[in-house]
Image 1 (cartoon, rainbow, N blue to C red):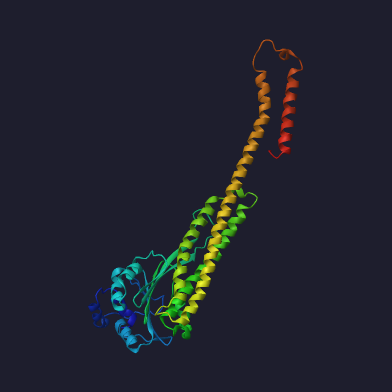
Image 2: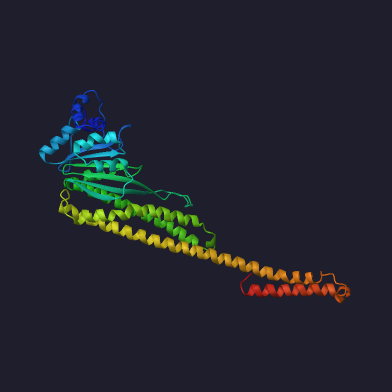
Length: 375
């Protein structure tokens, strides 16, 4: 039975004493290869489980418990365990095996956590918000632009446990990149934590670049010739999606800063230099998001100003036409009073003269309003 195959049974056991049954159950379980992110069977939260020594994979032992004990006795290498949306029952045995704090375990299972960094004894617990850009042909008032997920990371001296929530943010390609760089992977669990943080922040950069294209398109539409007719709902939708991105990015600044500057037992000083690079990239994304927020506010204000100007223009046109129509209305109303002593009623040329005066007055008013830009 492979180490990862036995892990499926470990996740269903809530007591440490139950872990001793894994070796006996191994003879009855079918062999399942979980060494690649695409081979996780249905019905299990385990995505990957691999042991490393000197930056290279170690062939799996009979079970997870035995492998962890061998790693700890040799005082070399570490175990990287990957999970996807585990339940309390699936995570209970793992929490007992690695002596994880109950509060951190609860956060890892429940998800919907704020990006943070916590220390429980010799174990680090980090929460990262993952983001991905949702492709769309045309931005509408209901388009989803940013989709978020979470990655929780437990880091000890001889283990890394990653718990992923959401449909995106797979760490399979990242694991393959790390395995190709044995020198970096040989630096231990801290190197894996850095790689995950760098991977998450790189995704932030890609998403912000894509969001900028949407903002540029909205800005171009607003300042187009018929910008007053642009849909304000798209601007509000972008602001909502930008707020979702901001909630993922901004709170991560402090945890990354702590990883880069504060002395932490499981983070070697040479790894902290890499976290400073991640912090620089994160700062760039944070500033870009703040600039996007200000730009969207300006675009929205410009759009509302254009709408106000358009409404004023419409009101001026209505007022001008009302003034033009008022002339024949006034004259016709005057001659419709039906008084007996109105000499003009019996004048032969009265009607054509009145029609001519009305037409001339209307033309003068129309020309004046046209010259002043009211019509």
